[in-house]
Image (cartoon, rainbow, N blue to C red; front, side, top):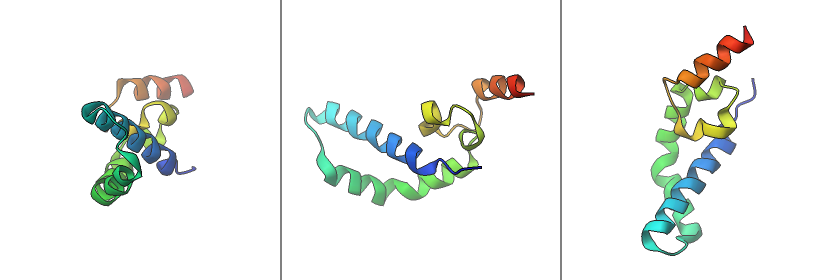
Length: 81
């Protein structure tokens, strides 16, 4: 199974950066990304490793939420079997 961690982490950073930009009404810039990685990369990797998202077919849509419970995941699994 391919590890989709990096694309998901990049998506999470983009979402958080966009939210921060809305809050401060300007682009927080590349410094925001560096700070995000410094402050959040470790917990995000841990959350990803524990999540259902890493094994889900829709990882690219909502994997940034790193869910441990997900009704959609169950539905996808049922369709596969």
